[in-house]
Length: 355
Image (cartoon, rainbow, N blue to C red):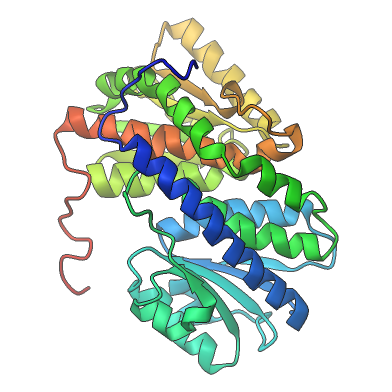
């Protein structure tokens, strides 16, 4: 896209976003430094802990660390609420936990962090250093993950988590191109801005067509599965009160395919990892269904269609969730809001009273 081309992005501070991106690169260096400290100290296992949206966000890092890690690396994704009641037998005082909380006060995460610290575990947190969770882990063990301008999807959180996880892999000799990856993504925020501009008309079109649908299905896999859940559950269910069904491409053919019918929108998020073969099988089924029934409510969003100049193909799998989140959790969500007239920040129950 030509630099002189002026494309407006609705409810989006473009300059502020680029400023936040530059700040994230510096914060990423802090995450890498903490990973170096952990590597120097040694560890027996890595635990990625979240709840709700942060649990969804950490799925992509679990996928990446298992994909690139060695056979001896133990990585576990745990839900804070579940850990509080059942624990984890593999967790020891030598374990390391990475967690996140945008508010800094998430009750389940706070409870878990206090217990973990009391047991001698090291906890790294992406949260406000001044928040309750930040205070519990200590300022030296946390970084703020929220942007100053409150624009964007979850790509900033993905970037910081990846800086930590991929740096640990680098120190194990599993991800030797870490420095190259950081170099090639330091200015990616301008590319993500261009992708937003490219998708903006489609986001408006999709929202006008499907935002008022009573029920929508979402299908994803691999590195995109966490973002698939996050958009369906945290954005559409929590923030728009829309009924959704989210399912992996791997499980789609074991029950959910029978729910596909005319006038039920189906979104397939195609990724760029090994699971793409599973996505393509689902796509073939949906295409055949659409051809037979003349149904027009099948939507495929493929991250591979959005170029990032100068990025090695080996790194596409890492940034594919970043791409999907700006398309859905950011742009599509904004346009759903304009159609439904339902403020994304309004809640009936969530954080409205004690429960």
